[in-house]
Length: 299
Image (cartoon, rainbow, N blue to C red; front, side, top):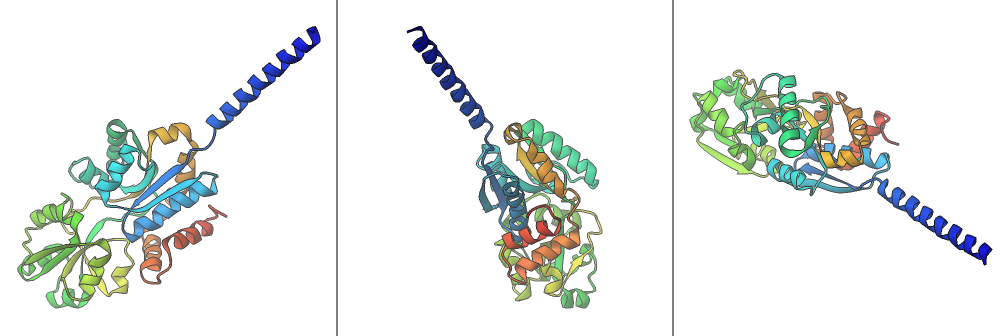
């Protein structure tokens, strides 16, 4: 009987130890990472970069690529509907924090990093290198005809020009409201449209001037020119991953994984990647994968 009792005790102990082991192992499982992005080409490329880096390091990923505009993505990450997406310092500063534009890139970054942490429990990781600032774009033929090289050169002609932009740009303070006030511009009309239609609209003469992105490969491809922001209206828009703090508490390695791209993507390179999607019609995930492989960051 005594021997049987010892066997029972040992059996119970083993069961308890096995249960504890599996509970601890379960607690150490890597969390599923929900990756979001905005709806335009560049965002789909960098969103896929985030997802591929996570998957290459053993994480399961739920993609919500092309989720929507700035407000939609920001609200989604604050609610926890997504865990990470790539944002721009100038956007975080002016559109989310409602602060005035800051010309110094490092200062802008430090402000958003500090205040996102305090207000939203979100962490800005290191910028990836490219500055996708807004820019004002015209057809080269029109710019040559009007001898417009700077945004301020548009003032005498704005009354005859139609301005095209995303609906978001027409409303945000670092968009049309601030731009027209700073440069004293009054356009004949303003048309809001889907991000994918803005360049098509200017190429087909539906609008005369558009807001563009400095890293957009369609600018040279469509024979367009960027007007100099001579009053330095647009703040720096350096791209960096924004991550929920509760994800970093569970998986702190996410910081090192995503920071591997810190400073690795130039403006020119980002424009090339964007054009590979827009001009050469390659899928954004494929473009992102090829780029990461070229840096030996994924297999």
